Length: 170
Image: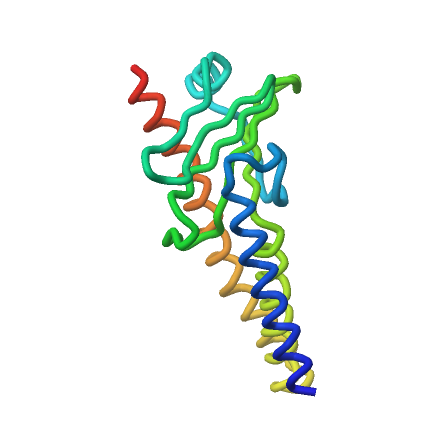
């Protein structure tokens, strides 16, 4: 039975690596990953992205800003092993909507991995303390701020990348 679990884990890791590599590729589709957050795009960044004359490709990195019609994709990750306390986020802006918003999207494998790992951890804590719902709740209370910090950091990475490119064009 443990070989089955090991095989499933190995298969998941391989699929996660493939998913992560496609997630940061310039030539992949525009809409990718799972939406994990959204916010109104600041006016100065909206103006910059709307008037972007061509794609921006980072020097010797995989980071880019890609524009196709009314859609802009912001991929600030410099390489697959990018150190980040949060998830790998890309920005996705669709100017055909009424309000310019930036959607933050993460790889499907990363989001599912966090959900699965959190669920296993909580159930193990719950099982260990036998009817101890309080320890499971405490685990959630500890994990939620950590996930929120990672989310905030990952959003900043996307915004900073846009702002650095905007300042470089000025």
